[in-house]
Length: 441
Ligand code: SAH
Ligand code: SF4
Ligand code: F3S
Picture 1 (cartoon, helix red, strand yellow):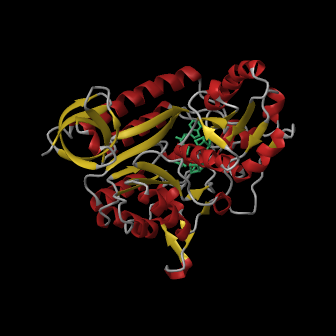
Picture 2: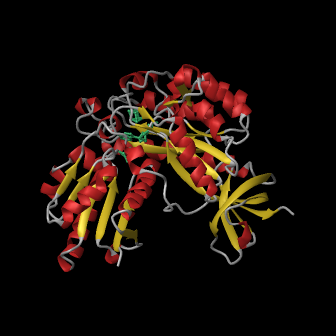
Picture 3: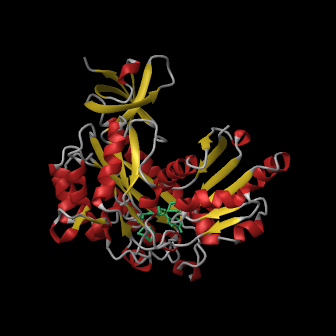
């Protein structure tokens, strides 16, 4: 009988991708995935370390799982992802129910680690190994479900923003070779995937080996153009980007590549130049605004998304007002915003901190503005005809739900045969987090 694996994913899309790959590699050790922790012989928590709350969640979940293990002593509990990388052995000390700790760069070694567990040993691996994880993982197997998929093409970060743990948890920037990415994308397309989101902590810093390209390397734009040639693959997205890596060829691709979707997540974090400097972002509010202008010139209907941090050490009311002004100037269709969270080991953690209630109050003001803008962008779609990739059944009978080119959730009455297909929908209504429409004949 196959052993049962339950994976719970926290954090960013790269963790979603990694969880799929971990399930695939553990399938080679005889595991199949199940939907509940109670049904599992092994539980893997794929964790996130970006903010304090994210990391603490893991320990409260481990506390609950400890009870499960008391009732089922053979149950194995593993911690993967960025908390595993950041805290390593400390996790096992803090929660002795944990049997396995594996970092994001070593999970191709899971089968060997699992064998150690069955021999009664604990297993810990938070190396940044020399060997290429992706080539060790082998071909993308059948674990993926649905017409939209993530595909990690770049990992790690060399930017060292002063608030951020990612350069420490994910290591230095690396890019996968073009042939490897094309092979994985082609395999996904052959299995019915219509939309691929290319992932990287700084995905637009991608520079993958490519024998066919000048200088032996392809940029992200080069990769996008190559992927656009894959039959059956209709939509390409990428995330997350850094403003300083928005190169001319990538901006141009937004105008010239029909499969590249009109949506861009381009975090700016703050609108204040002195805060941007203290964050070590190496761009200004003005250079960001100029960049947005150029991107909009290439693709006028592009929907912009961003990330913001409020209450960074030293942020004054005037700095915060600059952030609000930048948001007003850009007009985001979507955004994420966070209270600054002190991360041990990062430079900003050493500085004088802003009061929690000030952070909370600023976050509320920023979020009110951002949700107004999000609603405006959505409302502007009413009356328009959009393309929707239907991904799943909706709440109402006969309804399907999917994503528009601008990444809006859209529901419509549609035959089940359209699941996994792209169809035209006339938008009739805008609800707080979705659009409703009618299938065009
Ligand atoms: N590589 C991406 C972001 C990765 S982290 C980029 O550079 O844009 C995702 C988001 O989490 C960041 O954009 C930032 O807004 C937020 N974040 C990172 N560290 C944080 C911290 N210490 N406190 C609060 N938010 C943080
Ligand atoms: Fe973190 Fe900055 Fe790197 Fe993004 S660019 S992952 S925010 S250090
Ligand atoms: Fe979190 Fe690691 Fe992603 S810290 S945001 S899971 S890269």
